[in-house]
Image (cartoon, rainbow, N blue to C red; front, side, top):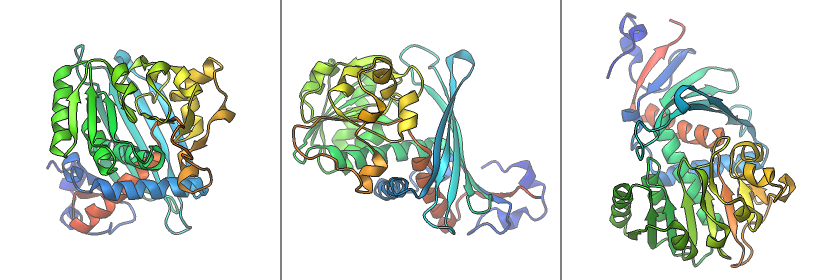
Length: 354
């Protein structure tokens, strides 16, 4: 591991390289991707994310915000900020900055880099700096598992995964964790990627196949998960029948879109954060066309988790979960990783006041 020069050249650095909680009010624990990869179980992250949304639904979170800033070369920076405040002594604020850039060649993977910075929200102390890749992947998988448990039919068995990129394997693990999905269809523009994800599903005990027509596969699936960088609809309203659950993860910025807006018009729409979804999610397109209004959105996820709004009440209801990704999830996952890092002595500490 490369040690930052501010630590290497400080004669007290060795006392701060590893260990439990920070020894200085300005000490920040720095965790690399290698430190955090595999450090927490998905089940633990699902519980943490569920708690975070419950706190949000109960009004015990800090405001969740998301900012989209265009960059050069067709890229963009996504900034999420917000926090959790379960009580006056245990409040955490976080900021995640992800840079997303188009693949270097057609059919390649989107280039993604970023970091998460956690603070004590009671006194402003910076606590940790983490690579964002692990945080984003596991918290996105966790919210999918949570939503499927809440909104899929009890007899749901077959799922479709549209998109076999960086997030896909986490989504397969999330579907497996629900205990519902026994069959999975996988679609991607690059068939080899889809084959790899299907193999991952089989290793988890799920029957899996690669499909070439996502619309036809959606029509026979109980749960549909979309996780692509698309800017035009992949699925039409005719593909989504009664009783289905669509978890739309890809639209998290202006212009991004995976679903025909008519799908939202014929469904009960649940969002992570309404203001974000209205500006950057699938909801932006349905609103622009006048197909639905903000008042027609069934609920925010936090309201469902907190029991303030009912979820599925019958087998015929169709739901769309419009996920833009929130700081609530980021803080939940990053805080869990920080706790584990402190217990295991992972990472290094850098004294910003040195």
